[in-house]
Length: 368
Image (cartoon, one colour):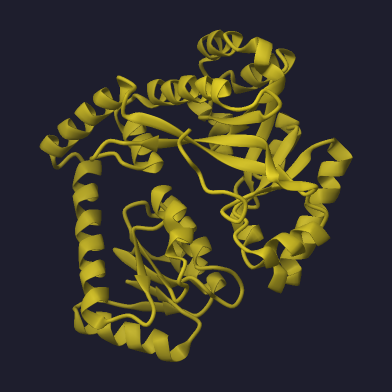
């Protein structure tokens, strides 16, 4: 078990409780120590405080999700607006949210439930449960029929008129009981060799949203790297809406995997020639972030929310964002700050020169 909290009393209390429950404990008091632990040891579960001195606990949980996807990830917070963390749960970054001050039985219940879920997923991942794997396969087939896959939209606004959407980003919202969030669906799609089919369905659904938003508003749609490797099929889908290409921005996800995909650069070149915009997401999340920009030459750069969170209180983050704004100006790329949750974060980002904003502070994802 990994426990991360910068309050020594809380760290000691949680450690004592989970030790008595039979877990071995490793502790950390800040994000840097938590990240080091995530890279050095294997954990069954992690309990991480949201408000840490140098960053939010989501940075540790995000890293654990990528390094140790089977680790149960529990976020502790004293904030009242728990709905602000729902996206982290929906995206698979967080398994459970526990309120502070916590009750011991509640904490242990969440912990045990999360670990049991982790073990069930572990059995699925190693092929020990053919029955569960079959159920997952059936769930994918049912989702691919289309009715159970919905698309939500979240506004992207300009600093001059934050009450009006300049763009929307399309976000998957699967409605299946077994595969109920985007990360679960994408993970299952990859395990069962259906990632292109799932991603193409999401793309088709996203492009249909164009008819539901004003003509003057643009739309960001996500592409999986595997789709970029299917150049002919992708171009066939994009040609259907080429007359609307000026409104559509193709957002490239999981950039670290691009160079493993044959033909991705040809897909990007052709899409650009057809008039579609290109965006890179999560800049600052730490993997191949700057190197890939030279290859993609995007029209938009989206800053990872780990750079945005608590930026008003962290001069180091402010300097980094200012540098990215300067880079965007030099390359004619619009810089978008995503994950903005507070007025203080917005004000600090404005001072850094940010023009475009996305986050709960301006609007939550809704299904049109």
